[in-house]
Length: 183
Image (cartoon, rainbow, N blue to C red):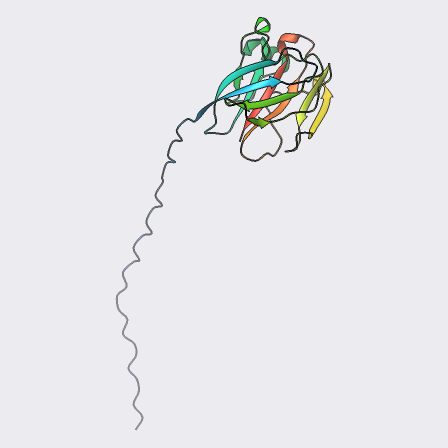
């Protein structure tokens, strides 16, 4: 006589334990890494190098606009509002003979405190033009009329480092500027 198997006995089931909540971990703050950089006009015809030494925190990405001789309010009234988070620097005005002075023929270089070149030399500028970087190569620049200047909006895709990303002449010399990008 065949033996029938007994039907399975159902065990009372308990609900599965809830999945643990994912832990939210705040990123560790990055300690500032301040370096001194020298922005220099190194054109061969220049009998007196125009340069400005500034301190930059390179621990976080940033865009830096260095104006010739304007407050941020004056600069934004001329060029338009800078994007949130842009670092604005006025290094000391016309009397300092520092950078940026844009009178045509400028060739810019960015150096560290030991004079090692970080970026540049750029192409030579022309009076009445704005220059925006469009690549890594030192010759990768687009020239535009002054109305094409976009201070504070470094758009080029660049690897980690400090880069000169734009510079511009201006109808009012105090509004001349150079833009740096920290990646």
